[in-house]
Amino acid sequence: MSNNQVLIGEIKGMELGVLSIETDYSDSDFKVEWSNVKGLNTSADFIIMLSSRYRIKGTINMDEYNPQYLIISPVEGSRLFAKIEDIVYLKLTEDGFWDKVKASIDGGYSITKASSTKQLTINGDFSYTNTALNAQGYIKLLDNRVEEDTTIIKTVRNNTGSNIRVFLNKSWFISSAADLLQSDEQNLALRSTNQVGIGKILVRNHLVFLYSSVGVASNTEKFKDGDDYSQSLEGFAELEFNAYGYDDFTFYTKLQLYPSLSKENRFRTVYNFNVKYDLPLDFYVGASATLNYDNKPGEDVSKFDYVFQSVFGWSF
Image (tube, rainbow, N blue to C red):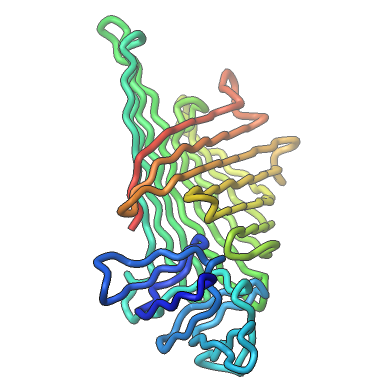
C-alpha cells in the first residue's frame, strides 16, 4: 500500500474504488481505497477490467523488475502489462452462479397527518457479471394513499425491467433491454418497451464509468380508460454515468431519449438520478429521482410523471 504496509489474505474483489481483502486475523473484510494500493499478487483467477477496455480472466502479479507495472496472465492469450490505476474492477472467479451476483433492496414509508397521506416505496436491483456480459434487473414500487372523509384515493406507480450488455472487443457492446411501467399519473395501465442497440464505453476508471448506446425500440401501451393497445416504433439514445469512491458516496444518473419513428413528432424522455451513502455492515441511505416526459401522452393526461424518494437499504 502507499504507506508501505503489506496485507496478506484472500482478495475478494475491487469495486466502486474499494479493494476487499479477507484475512485470518480479522472477523470482517479489510476495505482499502484503491488509490492507496501500490501493487498486488494473486494466485486465483479474477475477472479483470482495464481502462484500456479489456475484460480478462486471469491472475495478477507485480513485476519485480519494474514495480510500477503489474503482470496480468490471462487464462487464454498472452500476458499484459498494466499500471495499478489501469485496473478498474476485480471480481474473484468462483464456480457458483451466486458468487457473480450483487443485489440491493431498499424502501421508505411516510405518513403526513395534515393531509392524511401514506406512501410506501420499495426498490430492488441485482446484477450478474462475467467476462462476456453484464445482466441487470430492477423493480420499483410506489403506493400512495390519501384519505378524504370516507374516501381513499390511491395512486400507483410500478416499474420493473432488465437489461443485458454483451461485450465485444475493447469498448463496444451489444445491449438489449425490457421495461414495464404502470403509472396512474400518465393513465398507463401498462407501457412495455423492448429495445436493442449498440453501445460504447466512453470513460472507464476505478472512479467513473460512462456508457452510451443507440438503437431501436418497440413501444406498446394500454391506457386505463380503454381496451385497445397502442403500438409504435421508436429510436433511442441513452447516456449512463456512474461515479464511485467519493467519501462513501456513489452517484448514478441515466438519460434516455425516445424519438418516435412511426408517430409523427412524438418524443419521450426518461431520466433517473440516484445517490447513496454507505453505512457499516453494507447498509446505506440514499435518495433518488425519476422523471418521465411524453409530449403526446393522450387526451387530458399529464405530460410529466416524477417521483422523489429517500430510502434506507442493504446491499449484498
